[in-house]
Image 1: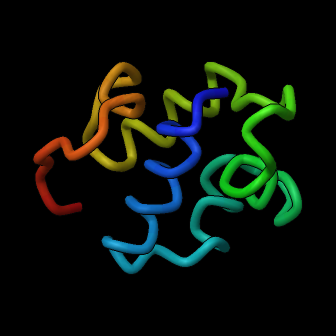
Image 2 (image 1 turned 180 degrees about the vertical axis):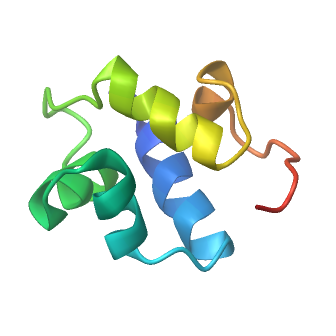
Length: 77
């Protein structure tokens, strides 16, 4: 998983005031999984499954490709 994606997920969640529990419910995963998606070292091979990434992107009104783009202007959720 790219650093941009990890940073972007955390950045979007924080900017929107979305609590981790919201993503837990949306993706039906554990808190540890969300933490892995957001903060595990760049060289770790722990990626967000594409079906989960799609749910997250849709939730934030973005495309999956947008999740890999830094400094993207997006609408407020």
